[in-house]
Image 1 (cartoon, rainbow over the protein chains, first blue to last red):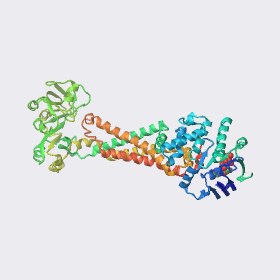
Image 2: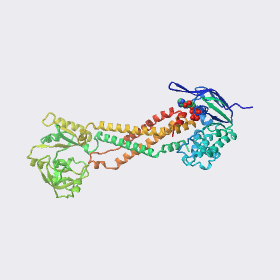
Image 3: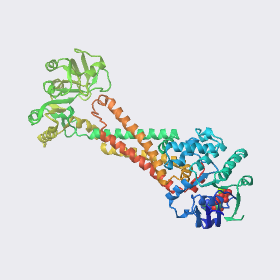
Image 4: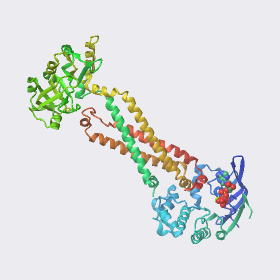
Length: 226
Length: 381
Ligand SMILES: Nc1ncnc2c1ncn2[C@@H]1O[C@H](COP(=O)(O)OP(=O)(O)OP(=O)(O)O)[C@@H](O)[C@H]1O
Ligand SMILES: [Mg+2]
């Protein structure tokens, strides 16, 4: 018996007014995602993958329709409630890593924890655990420019999971990586969903990457086709 | 890591820019403090210093117009006047010099003695000066500069007066704000000029600084509606008269200060805007991670505040140390007496620095408030 889905999306639309033109990025998307799934979003450029991911992650708002995450309609949260919600429930992995260059890997990972009530010692422990999980235990004191792309992306994954969020979203996380590093990153994301029970939603263009997921969705012109 | 250390790391990430900002704020704040100190110096009420105890009375028409010598008896009777002496600028050229590098004045030696408030006779004797009609009383700095000693002669060629002087040094003074001047007998000048019965100015001493304004008014009144009306003012005001002639100094300094503050504002505002703009993407990432607007605001504010305050403190205390450390009175021959960087002026500089910190974070804060995470993530590094 399946539990309540963690993500419930109904008739979601997103449109942008560009001059006189109404650009429709999402056109009535409905979708359920179960807890612990590793969902891969695919589709041509401009099909609305990132837009959908952003709305689920609470950094963008839909034009109409609803996005319930863990039973909360995030469209009803105000800016600062949404910020808190993201901090506690979502981990982000971006294509271009987006680590803060002046901070070490460990400090980057610690960043989301600064918003929590955890003590310095507790924070250190969680940072160490997260870095361990992505195989960077010995690289914590290195700055991003002292790490390879793959290592930077693994640090970014550590940052995404250090708050122990239910949801991890990744927008083309292997887009800037060589095949070997991409494989490492995908394996980590896969184990997060399989072994740690995280729900992972990943956008990718690469069918080989898609193979790591437990389910693939195709978007075309703002609609789910498969 | 704490939020505070994160702010510090961010502020110092571009070391050169941080340094340049701090330095430009420091220089501008130092300049501002200096200007305010100068303004205070030039408009300070002349109290409690010897220079404000002395009054110079000159012809109302112009400094170049002489005054009748017979005014002395009237001046000496004015209540509040403790001492008075003729005081005539001779302005001759010493030896072969082509410009007047120190002043010479014709005075009445017995009377002039009572006008010297500060300073002392360091060599020779003042009585010798009084007794010898062709002697002179010379400042120690001039003695030293020309390697002179008691008994030497000083020859001057007249420029303003068509007569030359040959004076014998009999006494030396030291410890005034300007130990350079040479004083000689007015009687000698009178004789050489054929006793015209005039003096250049009157030099008076009043009993107290509080009384000086009253005495000034009385002196002016005493000769009102005569053929030689006088204009009396404190020695200090007399010196300042030279700058005041250039225009409204206070206004001038005020406008320069405003320009300094305005320029300073442009510098810090553009620095902070740049610092924030090039970090848009990072700020968007921080937002995505759950940082709220007010946290990002406080990062920006703390950073611009930090830079402005460090720069301000360096500039303000630097100016204070500089102006306290060097003897401006000596350097400017007594023109700048106190040049005191008061706590009030330093506080004004501090307020400007604080204001800068706040002001320069306004536009970046607005930009960050408007920043949507999605837009911010799209910005390229
Ligand atoms: N801020 C915006 N203003 C106008 N149109 C936008 C804006 N953001 C996205 N769009 C449009 O919405 C559509 C979907 O964009 P989205 O970024 O979701 O595509 P995508 O599937 O992620 O593409 P890609 O694979 O290239 O990343 C596109 O047509 C895009 O031009
Ligand atoms: Mg995209």
